Amino acid sequence: MATNSVKHGALGAHEGRVALEVSADDGLRLCWTERGGPEVVAPERRSGSGIIRSLVAGVGGTLELDWQREGLVARLAFPADR
Image (cartoon, rainbow, N blue to C red; front, top):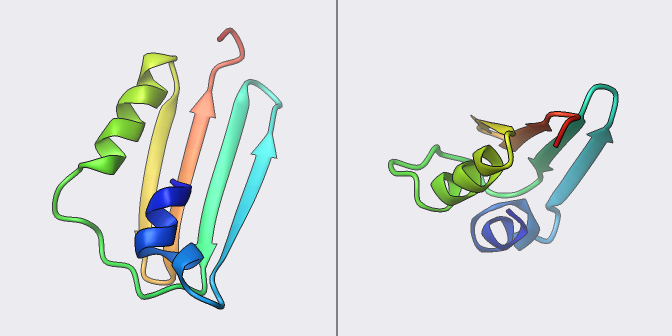
């Protein structure tokens, strides 16, 4: 996700930022929020996001991608028993 953000998102812009929130209440949850980069347009095909989704699913997790105009918000969740 960091590589993609450098190429296309907030980490490629001088003012761009990424916030990473982590919680471990009933499993592991991560929320990646980009802001300050170029305006976001949802991709027409799933190349990199499809790979990430497969990797996350392979360990029993889920991935939700929210292509907000201000920046990508990605929510990952992994069950506690993994």
